Image 1 (cartoon, rainbow, N blue to C red):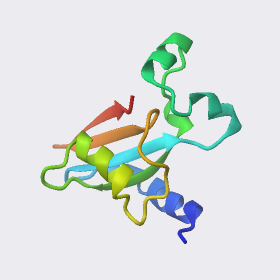
Image 2: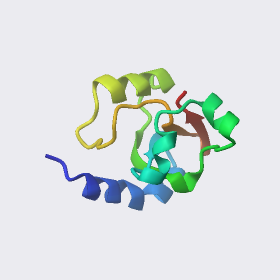
Image 3: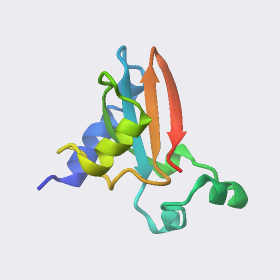
Image 4: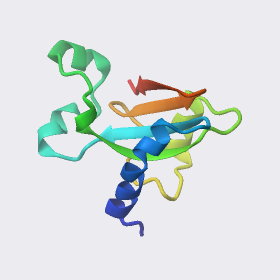
Amino acid sequence: MKDRNSVLAKFQSEEQKFLSNDGDCFGIYQLRMSDELRHLYFMGMDYLRKSEDFPRKQNYDFIYYSKFEDGMNLEKIYEIFNIYRPDDFVGHSLSVSDIVVLHIDGSNTAYYVD
């Protein structure tokens, strides 16, 4: 069984490496587990807009990153992290309120899973 805390610590210590990576890669952020954020778990963007509670970086844990393989896109990432989850992935299935960051050609673009 994987030790969630040690796997999270590994990825969180490598977040800057991910954001400034020379190659194409993607990262996944999921809301921190806390009672104060429970109202945001699995909430869509419409809910956030109405409540004026937009995603804030400090509410998220950087939980995973990997290089971008040929044929990779957002749909493929969604499929992988719902059906074929990697052994070192300790988050829940990719779902609403998660954020996927694509790091392509030196630029980072974030996508809110809605």
